[in-house]
Length: 328
Image (cartoon, rainbow, N blue to C red; front, top):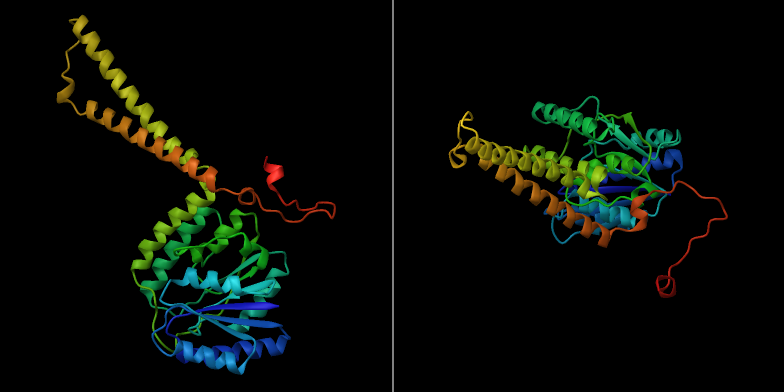
C-alpha cells in the first residue's frame, strides 16, 4: 500500500482537484492507495471538503486538529495513521504534482530509503527563492546531506525510516537529515513545481529565523543527541582552562612584581584581564554543569534502540522481551 500524507491549512478550493489528480495516477499505475488529509486548524471549509471526499472515496481518511499545531504535528499524525510500506508527503496547494509519484517510487527502487523533491524551476517570488537557496546551502554544508531543496514538501519514505524519526516543532523540513543520521540512504529527484492557483503562502520572512534555529537544533541532535557533554563540555572546558591560565598568569606576575623591582607592578583591579579571566571561569563552569545535566537527562530517557539502527538480521535472531526477573 502507498500512503499519501497531506497537511491542509485553508486549502478547501484545491482539495477536490488534488484528489482527482492523485486518483488518476493511482488508476494509471494500479496503486493500492491510502490518502490522509490532516486539517491543521483550517478556518475555511477544508474539513467539510475532506468529509465529502471521504464519504465518496473509501481510500480517503481525514484527521482534524482542534487548532493549528503546525506542519510537523500534522505530518506526525499522518505518519501514525499511514498503513502503507511507502509514504509520500505533499502539500495541498496543488504546487506539488501527483504525476511525480511514480518517479519517486522508481528512485526508491534504486536502493534509497528517502527521496526528496527538488523544485529546480520554482514559481515563487524572488524573496522566497533566494533566501531558500541560501538556507538549503547551509543545511547541506552543516549536516553533510547534499540536497538542493530541503524545504520541498514532496518527499517519499520507506516506512521503517519514519518509524525511527521523532519530529516536533518545525523539524519536518529536516526529515532527510534525521533519516541520514540513522544510516538511511537519501536521494533526490527533480520535480515539476506548479504555480499557486488558490489561497496564499503560509510562510513569511520569519521562517528564515526559525529555520536557522531549527538547523542548529538538528545539528546538535544528529551530532551530539546522545552525548551532550561532548560539545557543551568541550566549550566549557576550553573556557575554564583559558580563564584559569589567565588568572594564574596574573597571580604569578603580581607576586614576581612585588619581589623583583625590575618588574613594573600591576594593579589587578584596574585591568580588564582579571575580569575576562573570572568571566571565562564562570562561563566554563556553567557549560560544564549544563553538559553534565544533559548527560543525566539523556541517560535517564535514552533507549537502546536510539543508539543504533538495524538494517536486517539473520533468521536465527529472535527478539527478547525483558521481564522483571531479567532486571533483578
